[in-house]
Length: 401
Image 1 (tube, rainbow, N blue to C red):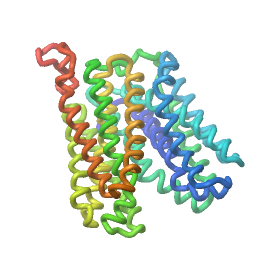
Image 2 (tube, rainbow, N blue to C red):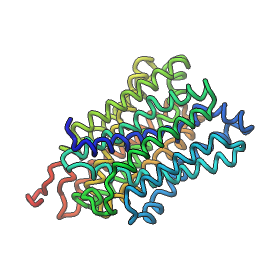
Image 3 (tube, rainbow, N blue to C red):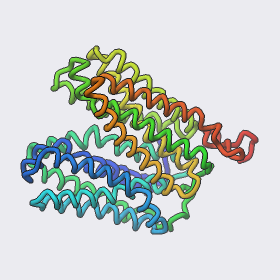
Image 4 (cartoon, one colour):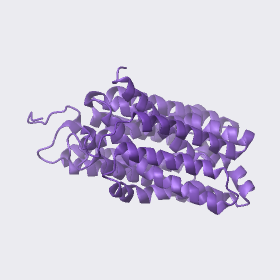
């Protein structure tokens, strides 16, 4: 797959490594909670706030930080954000108290909130328009691999050698990404790249895309947050089998990102709609057939493929319909995505005591169905003069570019 010049490809790989590092760093404490809690003499619930507090900061800070830094050169900004990741993660190794570790985690969360707003248009701007979707599939492939490789390997490393060693490794990976980005990323001013603005800007379609994102991700995480008890209590799998199923889910997610990368440049709206259908059907079948061990595992993996592919296609579509700057539009999408994660986990938790864990798949499917309805209505919400490339053709229905 010929994307572009070697320098651009190398920079893209470094940006993909940075998405891998940020996502792994965010989620890694989940696998190391007992070790961190015991070492710092806090309860597991307090240690869990190292992840939930992190996510809350990302939700709240994305839009204001993006607005504040809108005019900064992209290479300087991304290098600074990666530098914060490297230094704060390395400093986490030296802490002796919970409060200091929490403070450092929230600092990293601030850098990640801004990172997700900037990295998509920066990566897209390295390549010509016809291959940007494929480039973004590689970028988001890094975050998908975080669940498949980063968190399991980081958890194993932390359990084997101590949680601080795992944080050292993450800091080292961030330093590698920083070195390449600071060296190879072009020094273009903010707003000068064609990818810094939507190719077919449309406020109506953008608003529909934000709502679709929040609903679809809420559906995905209503089911996924409690997937472990679903697999053991409903599907009858042993606890030892949950890990392999989650690994298969991660592999399916990477496959979904790859497939999306092959088609999203030609039919972005249709690709998004199909991905939402895949997720919705998988969740319906998970509810209906989940009592079977094989069906439960297969539907969980398919749902994982759907949400991973959705993240990739949304990154490509926001660069088409962004009504203003791409970084502000990406910040809105990042906020919607994280709102969906938070809402899904809360809704799943409310369902458990009254309706049981099996209901999480059904309610997740309902939210996904609502997302599909908004996605199908999106073309009708387009501005009258812009029923255009957001559908994938690159031309308006009247034939204008």
